Image (cartoon, rainbow, N blue to C red; front, side, top):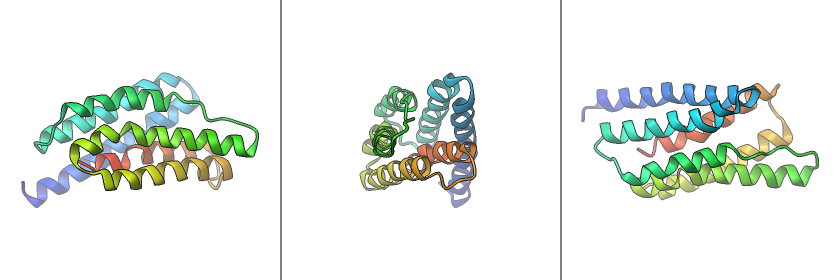
Length: 154
């Protein structure tokens, strides 16, 4: 595969990611189905498409869809500090675990551990300490992070 093709694939992954993050964020406002079902469908469809394009497809990737649906359906709201930390940590870990079949099938377990740390830490940091100006930024960032490293495991 040429360098130009490899770079083009990387750019297409970023374009896909914009759409996944948008669905994740819009689903946080209204129409939970966008976050829970459509964003995972698009993301895992990307996993499948890019893995086929690069001759790396594995049937194990299909397991990512129900795992992402479950993870993107988890509630993480709370009022008390430690409850927020625990619920957001659980949700971040679940989102990271949704990509585990992909990581294992691609031989990218080291990168997956980075994703686990990034996703869980970001879920807690962004949701508990609210460093962004508003929830729209937070949810867009989290939607981006949910697929960013997994897409680049392929």
